Image 1 (cartoon, one colour):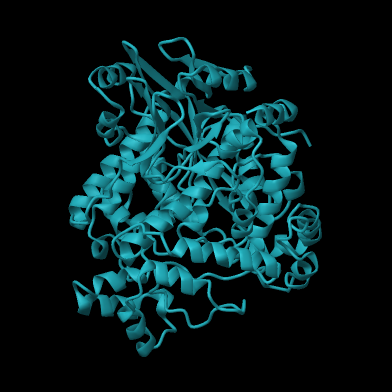
Image 2: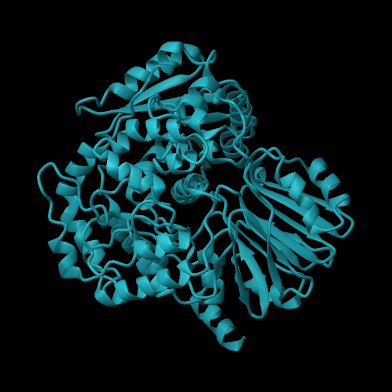
Length: 616
């Protein structure tokens, strides 16, 4: 297997001589340097030219990196009238697409990603200067920083309530909160974190919100298809990928859409629904693919060469996505669009009713009693859940408090987030370290929203964004943008602006998207109420490949770091006919693959980075 290095990334540097030396440690092949007015490097960018928009206004600079509606003229105007990095808040709220924004005004720097969390920013102090990048591992390697072992242990948990997923995986590398920008002062050393994004209030009706969502999604897709060429779209026939494909078909690009099917019961359902939707997209070239063609679930994991900068469920689907990307490239695709993130954006959770109860108690009770996730919950348990008044810190502390590690039962789903469960093969020392970390975080962590609904919907989006971000890095490895427009900020804002009881209901499947696509997609397609799952394939794949997966995990540093007990891992995850592996097994596999890929792929020569670190 060839060593893997990040193919697409960028680094932002202050206007200091020390930063120039840092830039020289980065590879110069396939990178572009955008200078400060002084001539020192400001941006080192390893991205295709079509993903880079820059502008100058005197000594000031602005750049948008990624797929966006930004133009050089618009950036130049914004930079010319900025007066300070704070002035870029307005531009941040108006551009369509998925992108990073960087600016240099009056010696100060601004760097930010997206509010959804798909585009992230990380920062560190290296050789005495503040440096930022869109990849944590690039900074970790540049500064020769070691792993933060408790954060690695946390990533073995099946769910990551806020802020567990924000814990730095490397000592010295800090993640920037998605809703904030990083300000680097003119001295190149001091930094500040400033908030630029605030969620819209949910005040719109479904009808008005549908108009806003339709426009936002159309713009999000258009910035990715406007250059024409061949654009590949996944087309499952569902209410995520199908709207993306429809909007893609309205632009100048040639659209090739692929629908997968299987021989399992209901395995051709996606194909049936996709064909109904295609009646409204006559110019789309449609391909079908048997799910027997790409690698099976868990197949090919030991051969994965992709270096991602965090362990997410992206690794579990990486062999399949890589195969799909290669198929798209064989059809000359310049862009790959998908509907990932749609379930995270459009799914309502039971704890929404906890918030709704304070405003519309009868409706909240009715919704709670008809929610499919609560079908086995007694009325008494429902009442207790709806009336629970614990704050977020207390809930988080309680979630990690039990001395045992049994699976929780009777969960009503009205808590702040999904319940916390522990891998039965995590060592006692690791469990204690993670619990201490959670106790410390619970003392000072604020929720993502003012109530449980507001917190849960953003937590769910950011959970999806972690996976979408990873799939984007898979696409970067193949030099094919792998894009999920449904998690663009403007789309997210359109969705959040609608009253919760109107955008999601327990009795209807994704009603806001249906309303947004009414008159565009056939009515018979909008009647879909189901979603095809892949559990049978996952069960078969685990049964066929569990030995190599166990070997992969036990060969990883997880046991050496004192995080995993290998014997317990094998004992609790023996394949059983017709059953999925333990839910905590998947993040363990992800962490094992992540650590191996990080060890094998080098961006900066290790000796040079270590020497620079020791001299600092």
